[in-house]
Image 1 (cartoon, helix red, strand yellow):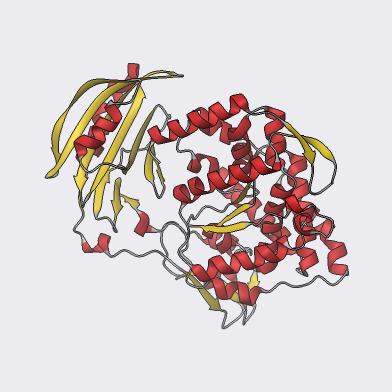
Image 2 (cartoon, one colour):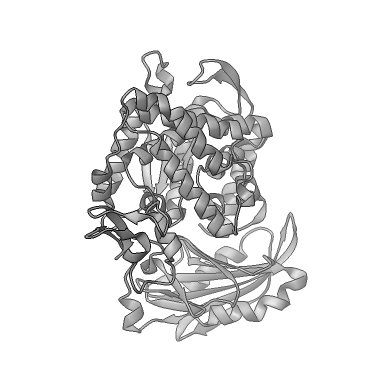
Length: 494
């Protein structure tokens, strides 16, 4: 989604806030009446309208068997939830959609109205069906308990608050779904950084365990996964919990809580783990970043499938999404976005879509040539709530599409970044290097240990820079010195 379409979308949403009221309704879990930001029907509509945005921003993982498998486990857990009890009112018996997103980030979240998402990054870090069942049960609870709607009512943030609480209230470490969904920074992203409260998370942990236990899974397996989350947080942040998850209970606390509340289910015979069928689905899963979707090497962004490249400003953070590539200046004072123009057959037509927008004042514009391709540039000013910004945009015709660069910063400081923007924009070029064009992702390889020994002795002698010994130990939910037994299955990069 382009920044301008995003702003238009948010404008509509913000108008909805002005007219949104609160609703008194019953909780599907407790049966008690309480105040919600939206009616149950409105929550369903919000989920239905927001789902395409999620899919567009993250992309779906291309594996129908894996998607069907996750749906099957999700439906089994859902069948034991408060939304499927004999006394559940008919209005709450809504269908659910379970999706696998094509992202290496370790993440799971739910939208109001029955939309549950897990990433391939999360699936690679789970060890069995029991752990998946606990995670899906946790997310189903967020929907059933209407936690996002509760937060919307409390914080008076209307539709944006409802969507934000759902996505921002992720159970997992290792990623920031809100930033990925609504591009970079700004008021919209701040709204989406909302978090579920600690009580919401504890309720979801409790019910996630109960739902999995009712299916017959050993729910204490979920605790091992929270141990992994704790280790990931320590690895990423140098110890402790990342600040953007400060409203969540510590994963260590949740680990112990899950062990405690799982006891009665396991005493009652809920002991299914089902690692073999889970691992059977993981074979050949894309592990880590997928270079076929674009990658950075030596400060150059390459897209093998579309056969183009462009320089990335040194030190800029790169956020690669299916619909755009975002590049953020280290101090977040400037942003450069790259995407494919929609509904435009020429560079000049795409440029006119920008210059014709209300609030845009063109400073300079004209035809150009970029690496032999026809192009058009626009230098313009725009007034925002945060003050006046200056933007530079290049539109380049290549391979039957129009590619768009948009760089912007505060007008007063724009000159500091203009040459940096132009270097990336005018550096757009065709890729002919066969090494780049033929690059393939690393895939998960399942290995059966032929001997006993410390986990570190099973690590590949050489592996891509994105993988570390500690990271692979976390992937397998072991320590580097954990003794692996002969016949034990391991997950390694292929």
